[in-house]
Amino acid sequence: MSSKSLDSFLQQNLDDLKDKGLYNVIDPLESPNGPMITIGGRELINLSSNNYLGLATDQRLKDVANQAIEKYGVGAGAVRTINGTLDLHVQLEEKLAEFKHTEAAIAYQSGFNCNMAAISAVMDKNDAILSDELNHASIIDGCRLSKAKIIRVNHSDMDDLRAKAKEATESGLYNKVMVITDGVFSMDGDIAKLPEIVEIAEEFDLITYVDDAHGSGVLGEGAGTVKHFGLSDKVDFQIGTLSKAIGVVGGYVAGKKDLIDWLKVRSRPFLFSTSLTPADVAASKKAIEILMESTELNERLWENANYLKKGLVSLGFDIGASETPITPCIIGDEVKTQEFSKRLNEEGVYAKSIVFPTVPRGTGRVRNMPSAAHTKEMLDKAIGIYEKVGKELGII
Image (cartoon, rainbow, N blue to C red; front, side, top):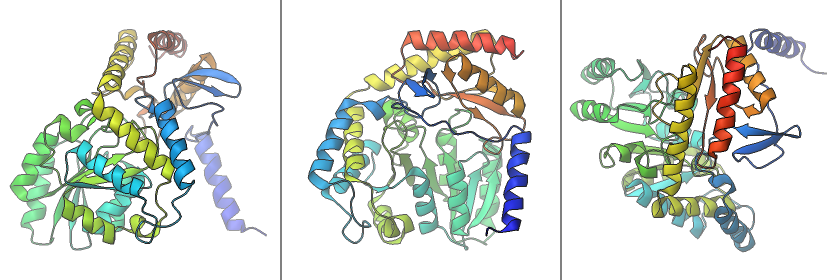
């Protein structure tokens, strides 16, 4: 017999979310996650995937993944520190360090795991973390796990960062102070002000930590936000994901050799969770090699992103402060945002609504993620559907 208090809690809160338009329905795909997807037997233009470069379905990655399975099997069989480290893991980490222009790198099971692992391995209750108010949930959770004092900084506000860095470092209360930021903010598509952040960090001896999940493969000719600003030797922690532009799954931390050596002996997801599968490691390594050999996919991504942005702006949609392929159409009201997404779906575009608590109340949006794999014909059709539904709902 189940708990009555649990049943009551779940029913009341689920009903409340549905009434407020905040309940998210998950739609299983019946196809690969490419530029077109099939859901419920219908083919839709896919504008909701993080598969920026189209590598999730790239034949070259599938080939090496299959080869890895034949040679190593489907699982690594243990945590990295026992006997779950294959030569493939070492090769991937060497390639990641080369890609990110750092001394070393360490791979994890997900980008979320990276932030849970790295922050708490270095920061503790005697430290402080200056964290941008729009940082990703995994950064927030990683900061909480560390038990360090979390000092919230106004979004991309350098005056606020400088004032709080001065106060924290001169207070004498903390052994270490870290400044932590997303490289690209996933809900708005704006880029962190890394040159100014690094300048402030150098002035106050702050540890610098950049989560570049949405920047790697996108900015810096693919090498990321830190490379985009020419700051590879100025940032202590570079966090990346293998699940977005790289097209596979997993995450990594890149930095100095001593830092990576420390994470290998003190970061809990590395110590206590089975390592990435052979297929994932082989495919990720191949994707990194492709990005290092050619900028073709990166250039195509930006061409498609700029094309879609221009089309939506010309229709009168508010895409906010986006500086990257992430293109939000900001609606505001949560219920109307959900309805907008639903009508786009019915007309043939899959673009998920993003509402509270993922974004602040009253800033609901449909977030568009164009990729290198989209054709101009697909994007033209999507823009046409946006125009029809936008006018129908009085958004434009």
